[in-house]
Image 1 (cartoon, rainbow, N blue to C red):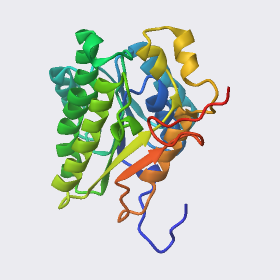
Image 2 (image 1 turned 120 degrees about the vertical axis):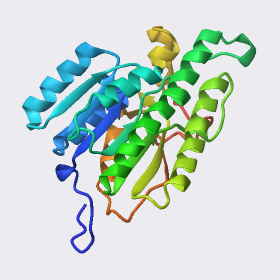
Image 3 (image 1 turned 90 degrees about the vertical axis):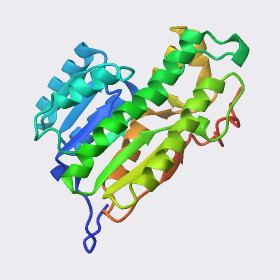
Amino acid sequence: MNYPSKKSKDVEVMEKILITGASSGIGKATAEKLAEMGANLIICARRENILNELKEKLEKQYGIKVKTLVFDVRSYSDVLKNINSLDDEWKKIEILVNNAGLAVGLEKLYEYNMEDVDRMVDTNIKGFTYIANTILPLMIATDKVCTVINIGSVAGEIAYPHGSIYCATKFAVKAISDSMRSELIDKKIKVTNIKPGLVDTEFSLIRFKGDKTKADNVYKGIDPLYAEDIADTVAYIVNLPEKVQITDLSITPLHQANAIHIYKEK
């Protein structure tokens, strides 16, 4: 988009963009999209081999710089150690895509495995918070207009049966995003909560613990979103004029109204 008379943020001259959950799905697609636009990236995930392959591909294809950080967002000490390991130039982070998250299981509340509950809460709420808590001071220190993009879900608007814990974690993402935006109102930091609907990624495969048949059934009868659709949305947001902040953005396939109401062809 072109705003010749307005000051807009050109991703091509960005200092650094940090993306969590960058080894697959929305995180990986976002890294690829922003690299194509000329941004230097800090990509974070647990799977070192995939991050290294992605780094090599993006640097070769787009001539950008990519830093990889291998850690689990569920460990605050690992988050701190890895972020603190960055040199001063790499700490000049202007965009955070707080994306790491997952769903495990689809059960009634009283039937949930507590290990699955802990995994969702520790990743989607605590890990999400660890990242924001660590990166925000670095953003404030840049004294530039920065953007935090939190990847929530339409499940953070309406809870659906058998998804109590996952939905609760995404309600938490919305609550934290809203609080962050208010707390940062006197700073140069925008906070956007993107809430995708059905996106065909590894999400359902992880939810159903590798059961591909169950995972594939989630997307049967509907043309779902793909990770690239969310990446395009992120790219749009980070290229808005500096004065423009999108607070909440829900994005769904054509035949999805919300987390519950979905029309599928038989």
